[in-house]
Image (cartoon, rainbow, N blue to C red; front, side):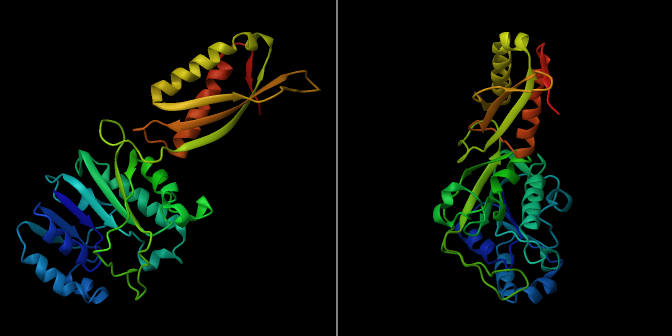
Length: 304
């Protein structure tokens, strides 16, 4: 069973339905046919063609892609959910500020994460314009500043998804463009981001997330003699979480001239396992656990 959400004038759904013989539900954000045609005049003909394919194909109006379980039949679970070129509605877009688009992505993934919506090995497929994904695979299209991208890996990871693949967007379909405007998409360099829930079997993630931190804490001579226990405990933590945690000792300890205390400093590099979702929030949480391991050894003390 396939689900297509937010399909504008339904042209993608029609192409998909004609090319696949599987059961398909396609949805639009607009509440009814009249509202849809008012925004996308070409939708009328596509809608009629899709209705001719019933009962294999159904069209449902008024579906918010971030609230899928609340709008669809509770008995239907999907093998693939497709959202092409997601965008906030014009009244909320606020000059298309990137944080609103990131929130849309995260909330869409959260809706898909429900076991009442997606099968255990189900795929979530998101199409983004060139540079929006924020992944190295985009090559020259990748935006120089990470802050300017939609951070699909991060927003997927926040709700337990990983990105397995990112093939180029198919040139056989020409999207209508930005909702409620006559501005078309520039499709060169656009990609499909194929995602699934972390863990289990299947393809590994394409670009495992990485984070780097600096850890500093007070450590007396007694702590230094037990430093091996600290390193072993961090290694065990990484194995438990399926995340590679590497510690590199900084050169030279800082000695506080007033108290004589020694500050131990490590650079910490974290890299998610091949099937492990790792968001920044989770990485920061792991950093706190590493700190706890450091000060749990006698002679260790937090700084600040």
